Amino acid sequence: MSASGQPVPAGMRIDWDVEIQVRDGLVLRADVFRPDTDGQYPVVLSMGPYGKGLHFEDGYASAWQRMHDAYPEVGVGTSGRYQNWELADPEKWIPDGFILVRVDSRGAARSPGYLDILSLIEAHDYYDAIEWAGVQPWSNGRVGLLGISYYAINQWQVAALQPPHLHAICVWEGAVDFYRDISRHGGILCEFLGGWFERQVASNQHGLGSRGGVDRNTGYFVSGDVDFPDELLEQNRRNPLDVARDKTLDGQFYDERTPDLSRVQVPLLTAGNWGGQGLHNRGNVEGFMLAGSQHKWLEMHGDNHFSPFYTDRGVAMQKQFFGTFLRDEDNGWMDRPPVELLVRHPGEKFVSRFETAWPPERTQWTKFHLNPQTRELDTTPATGEPVGYHTLGEGLRFTLPPTDVDREFSGHVTVRLRVSSQTSDADIFVVLRLLDPKGDEVTFIGSNDPKVPVGLGWLRASHRALDPQRTTPFRPFHRHDLPEPLVPGEPVDLDIEIWPTSIVVPPGYTLELAIQGHDYANSGSTLANQPYAMSGVGPFLHADETDRPAEIFDTTVHLHFDADEPPYLLLPFIE
Image 1 (cartoon, rainbow, N blue to C red):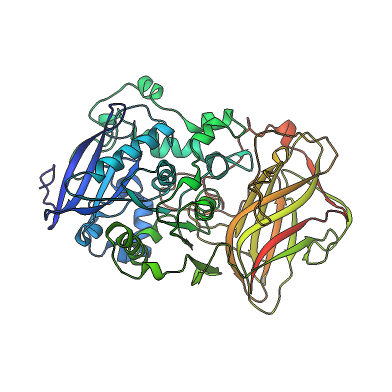
Image 2 (cartoon, helix red, strand yellow):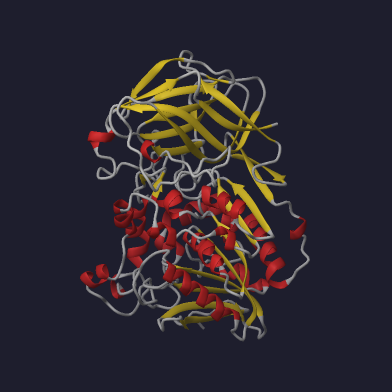
C-alpha cells in the first residue's frame, strides 16, 4: 500500500521520503521506485526543484492533455499515477528491472536549505546522491541520470565532477552554458528566467507547506510540512533573473553554472529539439561536440518539449542506451551510428537519418551574400550604399530564391554583417524563416511555442569580440567579458550565431533572412492554461527596459555592403 492507503502496482515497491545526507550534513528527501523482488538493479536517478510529489497533470494540465491527445501510446501500460513533469514514468521502467530515484534538490519541495538553482553546491549534492544510490543494497552499483530540461542541464554539471558510481547520462533537451544558452543570448538579457523561476521553482519552494500542492499518492504537502512566512521564503532563495540582470558580462556566477565539458567522461546520449531555439537546442549539440566521453550519441528531433521523451520511440531509445551501460546488455546499441537527425520538412514531417559525425561530414558550407539592390541571397557578393532600418520597425529582409528541387540545410548557421549605429550600441536579432510559394510563412511546433521559425540568433554589437580558441568556421563563440561600445556612425563587423537547425526547402519555397532590432513575432497561438503569451519565441523574450534602455537601443542601424567584407549568410547545405 502507498502512504495514502492506495494499492501499489503489482511488482513495484515504493519508499517515500527516503533521507539522503549530503556532505555538509543537510538531509535531502527522495522517493525510490523499485521492483518488489529482492536483488540488485541499475539505478536511474534525477534531482531537481520541481517537486517529486507534484503530479504532471496537477502542475502542467495543458501539457498533460496535449501529450495524451497527440500520443495516446503514452497512457498505454500505465495508470499515470506516479508521472512527474519531465521525468520517467515508474510504471514503464520498474517492470524492466530498473530502479527510479527522484530527489528534491536543496531548498525545493521536501528538501530544506537555501534554494540556489544550478549552483555548485547543488551539483555537489547531486554527486552525493549518486554515491548514496550506488551503494544501497538494492543497487547494482551503476547509476544513470535521466530527465528533461532542468533534469538534463544539471546532468552535465555533476558528470563533470566525475562521481565514481555514475555510469551514463541521458540529457534530453537541456542546456550547457548558463550565460549563452539561458541567461543572455548574444549578451542580451533573456526574460525567461524570471517567469520560469516564479512559476515552476518558487511555487514549490520548501516551506510553502499547506500553501503548496498535495501529493496525490501520499497525501503529503509537496513543499514540506512547515509553513514559513513569505519574508523567510524570500530570504531563503536566489532569483536568477535578478542576478543575470545585474551581471551583464560572463564571469564567476555563470562559470559556476557552466561545466567543463572535457571532464564529462561517462557514456552519454544527448537529445535536442530543432524547435528549441532559446533554451533546448544549442547545449545538446555543444555537449555532444565537446564532451570528453569515448562513447557519445546525439539525437535531434522536433515537436514539443515533452512528448518525444514519453513516446514509445523515446522510451525504447532510453532503455536501450541504459541497458547497454548500466547492465552490459548486448542489445545493438553499440552498433548505432553516433548521430541521428530527424530531418525537418514542412508540415511537421520528420525523416530519420543517421550520420557518422556532427556536423555531418558531407556538409557543404555555402555563403549566400546579401544583395542590397535585389534583397536576395546570392552566391555572388554584391556592393552598394548602406541600408538603414529602425530598430523598432520591421527591419530588413533578404530571400533565397526558390528552385525546382528539394534543398536541405541541417546544421550550424552563421551570419556575417557590417553594421553601424546612431548610438553606442545595437542589439541585432536575426531570424531564418521559411516561406511557401504564396509568400506565407511556414512555422513549426517548437519546444516552448507551437509556431516557431526555422532559426534564431542574437548579438549585442558591443559584445562582438570572439574567442579565437573556441570559434569555428561555422560557429562563432563570443567572449562576453569586455564590451566594446560603438562609435556612432562607424561600422563594425559582427559574426552572429543562429542556433543549429534543420529544414528541407521544397521546390517553390524560399528561405528568408530577417535582420531587425527586436524579437521575432508572428500572429501567436492560444493554448489552454498557457502561462505566457506566445508569439513565436515562447517565454524567451528580450525586452527588459533596464537591459535595453531606449536611449541606446531605440535607434537606426545601417547595414554596410563594402567590397572588402561583403555580408553573408553561411548555410549548411546537405547534398
